[in-house]
Length: 278
Image (cartoon, rainbow, N blue to C red; front, side):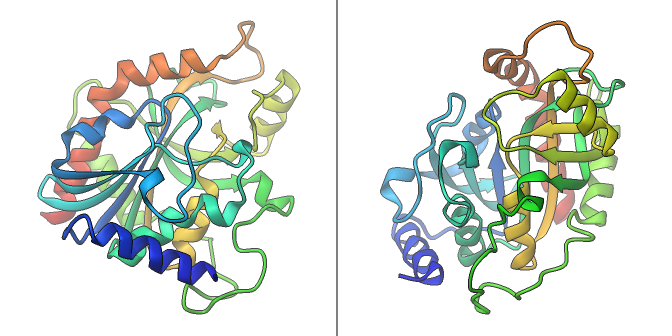
């Protein structure tokens, strides 16, 4: 079965559960899944019930697809994502983005929890992604490797402007109107994980011009742009990661920071969705 056939079969199965035709796809990162509770008239489908969807094995990722409305915008939302470090192939990891597109979504909002490489960043800040550095992709782990199916996108998709300027401006405007929300803007770098980086590695990543580091997102953005979707990326800075830190990072700390930020995160995303329809 081709990737196109897998996407078609998954989309058909989802349509059997709901009549929602989403305009926006949203991927919720580590600990940010509570936004799913605010989707109205939601249909929740476990990943296990969707053909060709993987299983999310990471704490903080519920493993459900939701379709409904948020701020009167029809959305399809991943409550938990798949990661390269879970041992999955990148085309399978990014298949949900293609399914979102097949269902009708033409805009992707992708979120994650990330370590703050920039010493000015504090845990609890948000970072608007201006660009990314895909370290696994540069080393040969790209979701578009192999034969290209023109029904999904072109052989050589450009990524110079992967993160939509108009959506970024909208996010800045919304954040400026929300007390207590600090929205930085910078470059996200993806590493494969699952081990956290050494101090020397963090200093190296800082030297590349990156402001935040995480273990996801870049493959999803590559695939979204392959299909010409508009992309907005937001990182929650969950911990400092300058390479000068004396304390070890752990996943529980990441989830605790996300839990403390969930109300501000929901307010920010909802404000962006309102701005998209006004």
